Image 1 (cartoon, rainbow, N blue to C red):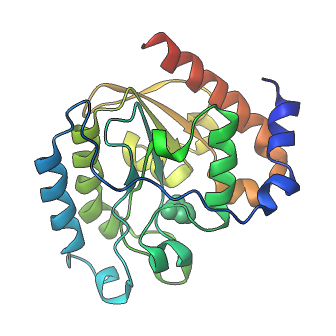
Image 2: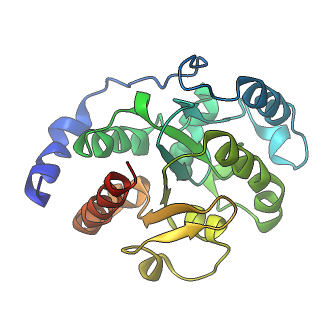
Image 3: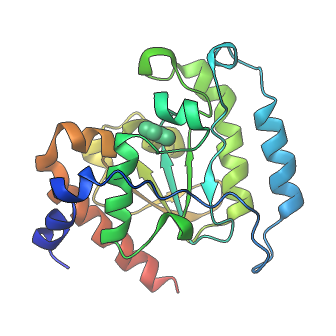
Amino acid sequence: MGVTLWEERLSEKHLSEKKIIQPVTAPQSDGNPDQQGWETLQNEVLNCYQCSLAKLRRHVVFGAGDRRARWMLVGEAPGAQEDKEGLPFVGRAGHLLNAILMAMGLSRQEVYIANVLKCRPPGNRDPLGEECRLCLPFLHQQLRLLQPAIILAMGRFAAQALLKTTDPISELRGRQHIFAETGTPLLVTYHPAYLLRSPLQKRKVWSDLQLALRIEARLE
Ligand code: URA
């Protein structure tokens, strides 16, 4: 599948479809995910009041998807729509993410999606270092429970948080990294919200995704 086809799939026609594919949140029975571990973690996150974002949130956005997924997609933090619904990537960037997944031959039901921060920063400001320090252990626990074959970090913030680096995203994308905590291959690409603002970067994203797909296929 080349860039053209992908771009066709990400055309305005596609993105204007208002149909939101709801992620699976129900526990899966096959493949034996540690359901007890997931439930314990989810309760802990839903009852977290460690930082001031807790006072402002409508919903904690824990994460959603298949708890046996090979793909873990990591974003930055919930936005307004995610805060309203309690689910990750259900706003405009989420619609684009659905299209990206479709172009990869995946659906939301087959992957797991989470953010570094589980609560919305006010006015969609950048997460603060302290918020990240307090929230990141939850994402690490999600990664330990899921044990994905591959991690896709979307955007600078997720990439830098997971790789513990301050390197710019332009230097992090386009090559394989390893998430040190679990030894899992990790790829970095631009955030769908950035793509909405800078559609010319779709080519680079498609190249990152092709690399990620090749790496994931080798791991089967
Ligand atoms: N942007 C993110 O990083 N995460 C979401 O869940 C929504 C938008």
